[in-house]
Length: 589
Ligand code: DON
Image (cartoon, helix red, strand yellow):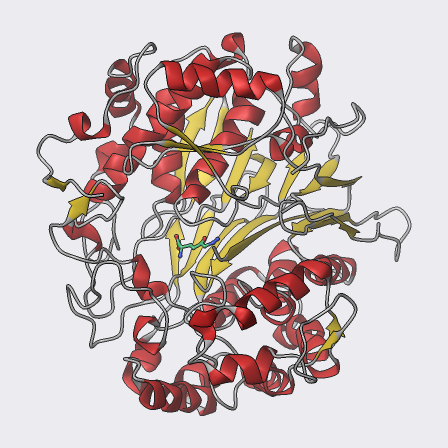
């Protein structure tokens, strides 16, 4: 893992001004991001093929939602560990300056046969029993119907071509495919090997061609007929047949009943910016609002990025927001989400409880909850078009390659999202199993998510679009980025490159990215001195592909995180047909 400093030239949008005016603020880089700057539209994603699709759609006159829909279908082909049509997610949309921000909720639902305590604690969530009714196709279609401009068919064109003709495997994809194919847990999944194994039976190498003819046929059907075949036609029959063959729960009725929903985004005001997040059944927006509302009570800018006090306050705010996540959050169609959670008065009370010298033990915060003592894969992309429409999209199969079950004849992977429900009613333990009622499974219920697509505005105009994969760490990756950019005034590229921390109430510890900069080491020592257990990640935290906008000049800055791969590009409207090529990041894992 490298720890490099960015050239001073890589400054980001609106945040430039903040940084130039601030005292020397240093972000310790974990991975140098890729940056593209322009004004006609901007896209950042994990994958160069998806970024290229997004830019092409914008160039043809599509808006940010058109680009996002096309990118999501492309990622379903070119980034199969997380890109999907067999999973679900959340798309945040700012239709234009001054307009309300919407969330297309296309989270999976529990099949009608779902029951409380159906999955034993500690069981790996693999196989057909863990598949939730997929939402991606319905969600992308809803987003397109409501906000899109180009024909639906056009938005699937690149994906179909890439699946049919194949595409050159990148190095990160080769590594990812080899990892899942060689994993002993993949042994029972023949469809996975047939679909993603190298035709010559050897490991994948960069430059090999991956073809997915069955997936191409599935996408072609969706392009022609819309989402109907997926929920009530041929593809639905293929899914149900796969469920019956491998012991899954989803029935034809579960699929026919599935509906994506349009919800109002959660909002918080932080230092004059309005931060919009995904509402329940994602915990992302509420937890981000809770953390920022607490942090508003501390002079983070004065303390600076190198101060242990800053990151202690951040960790304590994270701890408290995750306790409320466990207590209260679940599918809003099944549980009542208390309104006070996102209020300033409630956050002020929580902030008053933060001791700046000492970590608060997580158990002390919840004496009423019985806590037993005992001992990644998602993807996010961001799009802003030339008219100020912005999209933050996070979607997932849950774990890398989901349940590992491929639908026979249809060529796509199914999620294992049922593992996001609380496992055992009443069982909350120090390892982080949560047993609270709000997120127990029930027929038709959406499982609680941490996906946190986020849009920040100032004066009604977009200034920042962000998000990340990483399970529960997603929320805190977003919080770290918002603290660094809006709170500490770092430019977006530096903020993306800087190391991140995560606290999720239980287990009671701070997870931290490693970085060999002594200033980061000093921060972590300061956390230990305050009583935090600090644990390093074996790898990295999150993968945040973001766009910043300077509302004064309209300059768009697309920033691709390179923790996994990453490609950022912009459209330059002055010379039609001219866009910057996607800049592919170097993988640092
Ligand atoms: O919705 C959620 O919160 C999880 N299923 C996301 C999983 C994830 O991010 C794994 N990736 N790295």
